[in-house]
Image 1 (tube, rainbow, N blue to C red):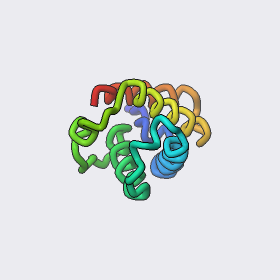
Image 2 (tube, helix red, strand yellow; image 1 turned 90 degrees about the vertical axis):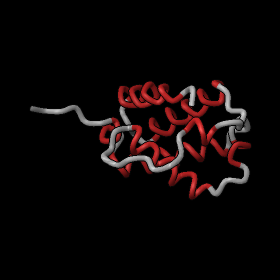
Image 3 (cartoon, helix red, strand yellow; image 1 turned 60 degrees about the vertical axis):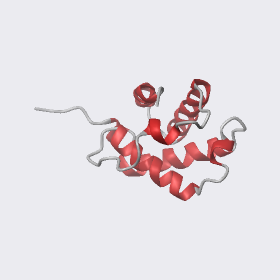
Image 4 (cartoon, rainbow, N blue to C red; image 1 turned 135 degrees about the vertical axis):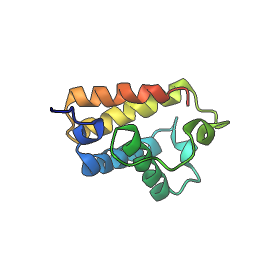
Length: 117
């Protein structure tokens, strides 16, 4: 019986995830609409936390040990527009990392379940 690979596996596992998160935050800190959310944030820690979250969200065998997204993002002024920009940067980072278009679309579509968080 064969099983479908997880989104985590489809983006290239840990190597692909690391490339995507690095490219994602390079774009975010250069984006005037998003950079202010990370003004006083240690970016090494942020990338580490994002990778941990994304591992779990994309179906790796690990679990996210951080706070719930809704709690972490509460009262930060994050809008659906900000979320959409974040997803566009994720799309671009995955594409630049060489992930195939169908997988990129699947990842971004999957992340939409977190829009309200």
